[in-house]
Length: 499
Image (cartoon, rainbow, N blue to C red; front, side, top):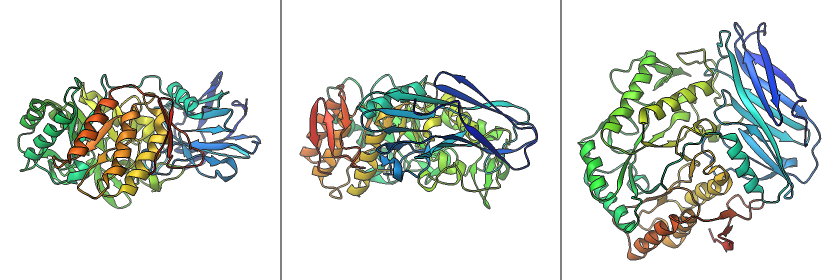
């Protein structure tokens, strides 16, 4: 064993001098459960430390708080001074070990691994303050350690991810089709959506599994915020869902549930943070009922898929790219309910969405990756690709597909985002490469396009949709040399891609 899981020291960081905090742990083979109890103490963080020497020659890959931002990569241990959310894998390319916490923990957990050992930081806060547990005994996280005697590093990581998430929720059929964002960018209408759905149905002709047409930000009264009611360009949303079905596609829709200008929402129901009072506080009872009603209304219109967005940024004030060891950098604020940790609050929100959605498919976007596992069917695993900038698609899409592919079908289906087709902004020979790689990846395949497609594009898209419906074996090859891998093994053949 690389290190002794039982041999660690810990430190509690609270708002006050700790008087009644109790930290306990239980061991079960290669698992460690960590518990926290406190009554009057307001615990903010717990630091764990395993001291041991590691040998040179190791490479280390970590994960991301929510989406990744073209920043996932293997680093040499000697250069690995970063915080790694949730888990990491270390390898010498012959043997590997993985260390992290199981999905749906009750704390935000990050790791530092260097030549002196491993440090884990558990963020137990409520907002930017210590949590008021009021005597509760809370299991913060279950740590899991596992070694692998194999050179197939990403297969080892995939096995480890399956251990992490005991009950993933996966769609019964493959999910693919259209999303209008990367060609419309917020400018669309009822008629244009029906037209887009017809395009998707035509591209998928002969495939029993019907494609989705997902209406992104554009349909509601206010741009990028509620109330979640249609604007004058859309009108009857139930009729639109029916019309999408009538032309041979399945209706899906986008929402941002924590940003809402409905007049019934008062300041008491919002998060007060850093002088800002803008986003809904999901621990407030009225907000919970409001979110539930929003989702049930959309469900009653007949939408079969809901994509909820922005929850990490709205809850904590930052996107993942701006964070390091903790989930928020802003101190001194708290949620309406001060008795739960930030992780518990996120989990409660995702469970509320899932329960309210019923049999609708759920896509999480800007969702906390380790907390939404088991509570969403699909998760957007990177920041946006583009219909205008090839470099953005290349960096965001390929990086997340390569380094988070191990999570696919273990946590959820990993959505590496769209193939954006908008006129001549991106040369088709480049975009086609991204389309083809996605079609072989066993991950969701979304295309953002209008009806202004060339015959070549129509043909290539139809071929991709058919390839997508077959099972493939795929893995990136040059993962230690390249943040954007250009060598891939697909169904036993090595493919070189000129990104």
